[in-house]
Length: 277
Image (cartoon, rainbow, N blue to C red; front, side, top):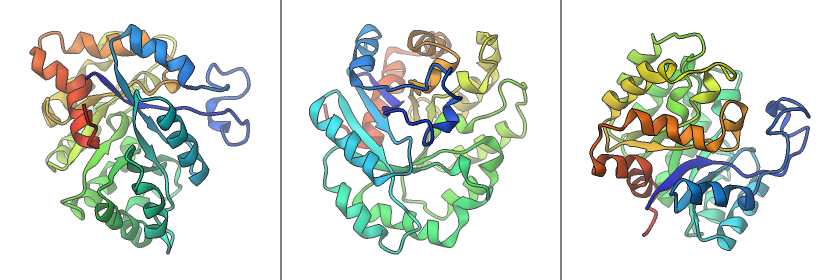
């Protein structure tokens, strides 16, 4: 099964979605399953993972409702307040749903670059294992030192790094991102989404060669068994349509075996999130 490991649905609100770039932005509008399904079909995907975009329990309800209505939404990565005293009650509220597979916090937006290491946050992350839930790490490259220390504290917790930890592709800066992502990859419970790259590049002028050193680094660091493709639709529309986003990654794995490509485009995602056939 080919699965897009990372995409979003939302009902646009100019206050909650201020980050989308204002009313003239191509992503400052509603995005739902009816728009994504034909794109998945056109590129051979049979499923997707819907990932939270708001720090809201209400959004969990919305995404799970969509997943109930659409079989091809195979999993939901939601949000709970991992710092809250009642974090276990919040997790219990959603963990019983068969498609609620993991949690994400928008760490990249936190003013504290060492937010991942806060005692209250780590207490919440520790509770995830009790419910069999994964955790998506959403950070910028400057947060990697904290992320390395963070994952070291939880050797049995499944983690996946979103968007290859957002290196400065537009600026062409490979280090220290490359050294740090290699160090993070040494933890075998950490996986990586090959996603969100086009929006870290020059939106209007990127070319395939811009991504090559970054893709090669994560391919070497994580290997074919801990990487998963994600479109980051509709955020990708700031820099590329769905097809170009898929084709960009496909070009870099032309020499991979059929089995390795199957892992990247679905098998690893299914294994990580516990998605059935």
